[in-house]
Image (cartoon, rainbow, N blue to C red; front, side, top):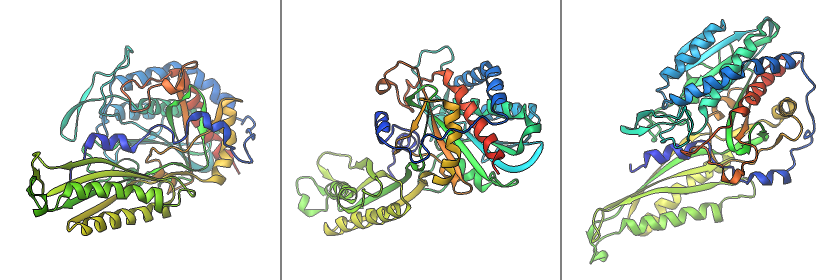
Length: 455
């Protein structure tokens, strides 16, 4: 296989929205668009406690940012988290899915179980942000030395969930149920990622090790910071919100010959090029994109080693992004049929492999309608909107297969900065306005309390 391993990581996770942020105003949020939850019995206490520990929240974030760790290598971060949860009196389990941490807070009253999730891993990116706590860390990714940076904001996710744990622990006796805090490794894929599907990581592995059971989770919430939105504003949508991400390989076998006599061989470069063009017609001419959008991108193409030799082989890899399960399966079949048929027509052969990586993040409409009023109350009038569909992917989708789950965005670009000029997630220039983080703490805390209090 001829995969560009660093591009695989960037292909999976958070990216720019499918629609520009300005387009959200033109999209209706549904019949419940103006519903705002009234203050809960604990919402004032949540807000007060969050303000009280905001300086600790920022300090945690800066410490984690300065010491980033790649997927499944988050040992320092995991210890920081586990020590904090233990100090709050929680039952804590470490080493889940390699470096994951799970804390359980049992409320003083009987009730359901809600899970809150944060991811802890960083990216193989060299930081270029001028802050005193900028990362100088290095690591090894797929056997190669790399610089390491929290270029996707997972440092903020971890710090916000640590703060949320402290907020909710301070009112433990008043909680009608149990809160499970999930600190997940390797959302961006592990440092020893095997893209052919031979290993499992992140959310999928945590679930396999029972994180959604004992006690069984009744609902799960997660958030992601984004430079596409202004600091402190919240965005979400019901139904498909982020795309499924799958990877494919096509290996073309021709017959080597001299470049001056191409008729004596079978040129896999020409055949591979025809396959690349043929794959584009799956979306433009064969898929019902009126139902849901979809993307097929060929990201690598490797063949040959000399200008006057027609090589024996060519290999390509790519990504598929979909929102509908039926469309996804159909597109997978069409990729295989298209590549093999084009190769056969040229007396070549093609081996095709498609691996499902992340499922689509789908916020169940009924559940989202129940919980959205809480986010509106937290954000305040004018500080929330409908999230455009994102063609990026997130393994939070696996938790949603085990329990109703809602995933939402928190803006982190400083107010007054032109959003189109803000460095995107995964950029070495990615910047977080830390004043936004208290909103994330308040959102996660209020969602947990409001869900537990629902009859």
